[in-house]
Image 1 (spheres, one colour):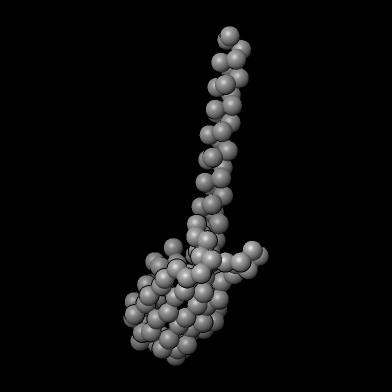
Image 2: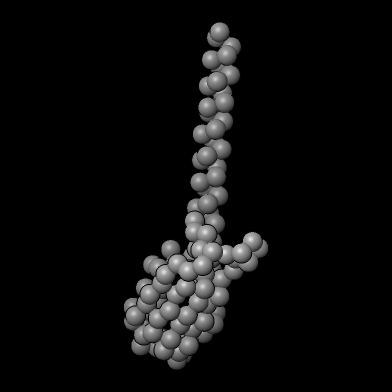
Amino acid sequence: RFNVWVVGVLQERGADVFRFKGILAMHGYEEQFVVQGMHMLFEGTRWKKWLPGERSNRLVFIGRGITKQEFREGFLRCRRSAVLAEEKHKKELADEMKKKEDAEKDKAKQT
């Protein structure tokens, strides 16, 4: 989700983005995700593992005519969609476990 968002920003505003960098806590990864870019170029890589309780997101954009609110809202949409996806996945797993438990109970009743 972050990649799609940042690529969109760079396509629309790349000429105004002089540089950006950050360390992100990406969903599903134990490692820090380090990103950097300038204008229309962007790269990211996994780095070292997060220490317990350390996970956070830090992202800095340097550019022309860029408002903090504009980037903050876009970034938070990425984060919210990841949280919603995780909640959906947890619910699906819980539903699956309940179905298995119910099937085992029904099987036990039949014997």
